[in-house]
Image (cartoon, rainbow, N blue to C red):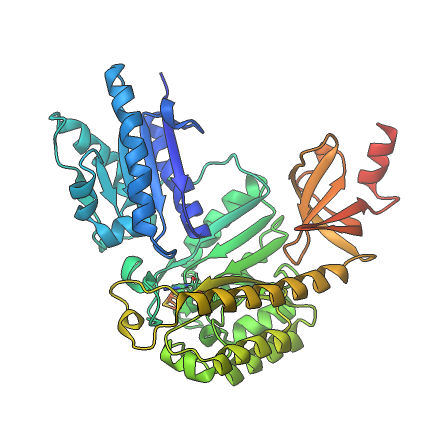
Length: 467
Ligand code: 5AD
Ligand code: SF4
């Protein structure tokens, strides 16, 4: 009988990708996904270390799982509990010390070893056994050991091309939890992309902690040719992927301003598949704070990059990450951030209150900003960003946008799709049009999405009228 696998994913899209790949690794062992934890033979918490109190949240989730595991064991069933991802990497054996019922702790670089880890956990028959901890950064790449992705999938997909970070921003744990930068070879990425497209995917988001620092081994037929280095950057990779028939849209996230090179900017100019929406974290608009953050760019550098990107692709919409209340941030520094947001006209952003991460340089800086001030700045920042997002969305009303139809909506006959600018669009359309990019007239705004109608005279629209 099939065994049930329950995966709970926290944090970023890379964790979502990793969770899907862990499910791929376990499928040959007979594990099928379930949404109900009580019925699961195996539970994986794929954790994230970015948010405040991340570890504590994982321990309280584990506390709940302990009861579920006990109930299953009382009924003669098993529940293997694994903790994966960045909290696992950071906490390691501390997890099995505090939660001895955890069977496996594995870091982001070792999940291809799950079958072996499960076998080892099962061999240790003693119920009071110590959990198995595997959080090393192995020499071999997990990608060489993973099975191919499942053919069945939706219309959009994530594809990890790069992992790790060498930037060491002073507030961030990623360089410690995900390790040094590494890039997958171009041919490997292209093969995975082709498989996904053959399985129905129309839009691929290339993922990496520092995705535009990508420098993957070039396809062998290019190596040694004049003008071709042994490695390609992200711009060249995007150009290569754009040749895949049926791959209509390419996105990438998350980028660092420092790595926005000429080739990538030119790709935005030349490739219609590269969508005009870019997430480019800047974190602050104050040069003093940027320096204290070790960001390797100043505000002027950022504005110059944005200018060049917009000359390449005039309709480019920008999103970003901001931290308020970094140690030493004054009111003037914060005002500079607001000014930058207005100047660039970001249409979206993820906003964070600075919170100290043990082991990072900023955690021990003097002048930590009081909670009340951080809260107040966060509110102000979010209000401005909401205003700009609303203004941007309003400019969509009356426009005709190409919308990639992704899935069924909540109401009968309704589909949900995505605009080039990553906005959700609700419209009525036949289910058979899922996977197509159709022209949609935007009519109105919902709080977090757009409402539209298939452009009249279009095949999809006619089909619906005659149905
Ligand atoms: N405090 C607040 N925000 C943080 N981020 C990363 N580390 C911290 C921290 N210690 C934010 C940054 C990053 C995003 C993924 O999370 O803005 O870009
Ligand atoms: Fe963290 Fe900075 Fe690396 Fe981004 S670039 S992952 S914020 S250290």
